[in-house]
Image (cartoon, rainbow, N blue to C red; front, top):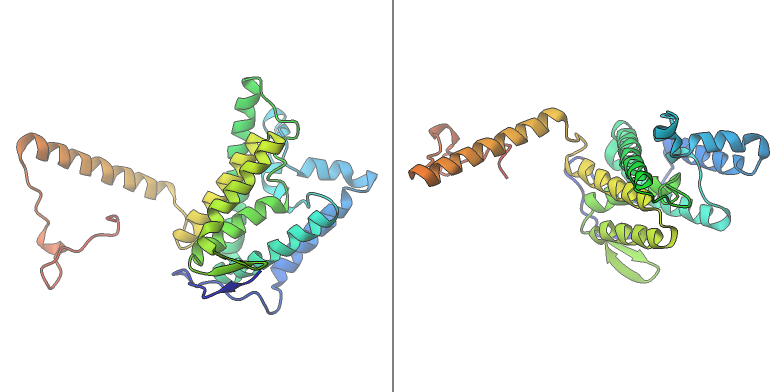
Length: 265
């Protein structure tokens, strides 16, 4: 699997799939492999269970799990090794494209945001009398990282062609493909909370890259709401009283055209 004709994002773009492995990724993959191995030893099994995402977060206050679960290797045998290989193919490009600081910000935002969505769904499901046999199984460990890194890569390289064995697929379709794979996993596992968690991870990866790594803060949300409220009031008054909104002279360019502000899309 490799990309061709990549297009890059406005904040740096992603590199190729070859070259030296960044030290941060060596550490990340080392932790994933070490924790994967620890689950097979009786002395360390309890530690692994305490670090994975479980309903104990909202049942007993094990809040640290919302930040630790992506770093705990999940699965077994050949599946784990294959998932790490595919994870690396995207993780390196995401790291080179975002840089160290934004890379870890993305990981942390995806981990916490996806966990909160999944935990809320699990709590509501249990209150309604529904509980998955193994909650959060679709988003444990490298599965969550895989979802967010693929989403980030696909967003920044929408026009890139990814060859899956011999089949060319545009990177932008990987967003939908991730959701489809997660939905199939939900049908098999009944893990609705995990499915929503993966959807949240895909959305966070997409939004983070689209925002240029800035994210969307509370102030931006407030400003957007205020802009929409003012626009609605102006439109309402225009319909009621026949007003016509005239752009100010300060918003006109040299050719007489009205320049749009940063909040106008």
